[in-house]
Length: 167
Image 1 (cartoon, rainbow, N blue to C red):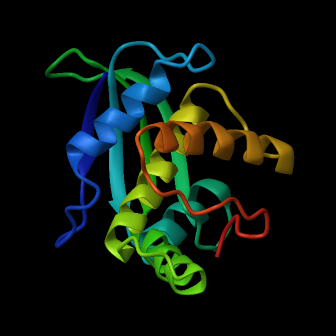
Image 2 (image 1 turned 135 degrees about the horizontal axis):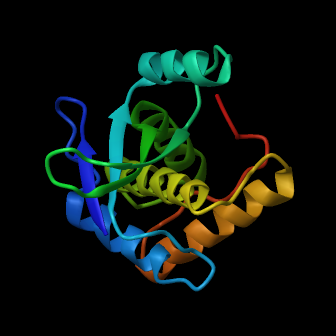
C-alpha cells in the first residue's frame, strides 16, 4: 500500500513512517481488506473539517475524521486511488492535552496527539474497508481494532469514550 500525505504547515507529527507502520499493521488483519493502491491522507484543522462536513454530510460540526472512497485510477501514475481520509489534527491535539492533564500521563502531549491522529487515520481506513459506525457498538468495535493495532506498536492510546464522538 502507498500513502500520499498532505500536512498542514508546521505539522510533522505523526511521521510518515509511523503512519505507514500502523496502517500496514491494520491492513494485515484478516478482517480488513483493501485492493492495492494509494490512500490519500489530508491533515486538516477545525475550519476545514467543518467545511468538509457541511459539504458532504450537510452538518456544520467539527469532527475527527472523514473518509471518502474513490476507487479511481490516477491519470499520470496509473495507481488506484482507494480513497481520501481527512483528519482533524487540531482536535487530536486538544484531546491529547485534555487527556494528559486529566490522567497526569508522563507521555508528552505531542506523542499522544500523534497517536490520536494515527487512530483517526486507522478509523478512516476501516471505513474504506467497509466498516460503518452508525451504531455506538460499531464505533466501539472500530476503536477497539485501531487501538489494538496501536497498542501492539507500543503507542499510548487515549481510552475510548462513547460521549466523545465529535466536539
